Image 1 (cartoon, rainbow, N blue to C red):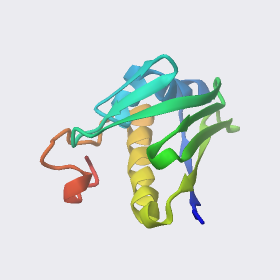
Image 2 (cartoon, rainbow, N blue to C red; image 1 turned 180 degrees about the vertical axis):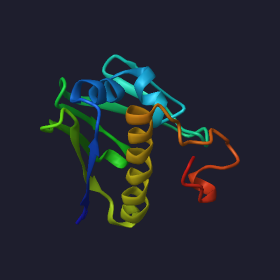
Image 3 (cartoon, rainbow, N blue to C red; image 1 turned 135 degrees about the vertical axis):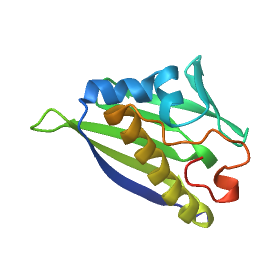
Image 4 (tube, one colour; image 1 turned 90 degrees about the vertical axis):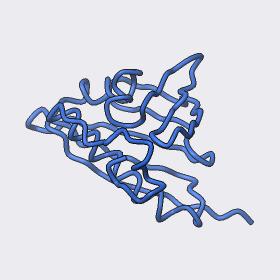
Length: 144
């Protein structure tokens, strides 16, 4: 029997859902916070990470500016749901379903790293990552 679990996080962003969605939905946006590059072709995104690892993710659903969903590492399904707040900001809810239990702790922490980099990029135009192949997640650097 193959057991799996879900990772769930929420993040408040002062930017509108339209701006946050653009970060998720465009090559340039994803490269500002998620990966060194994240180029979409034919409905799939080729992610290249700081440690030179690559991963291809199929985009499963797009509902601008409220939902972006893809198949991610290990076959999990990752959804970014965006809700506008009274002040014009966004509540982003990330749910990564189908995470292998043996990888849960790393993926749980990894999403915090990605989401905080997203907040820095979208709300403050700051890149928290170091972009150094010698200082990646593999060496326990959180600002990979």
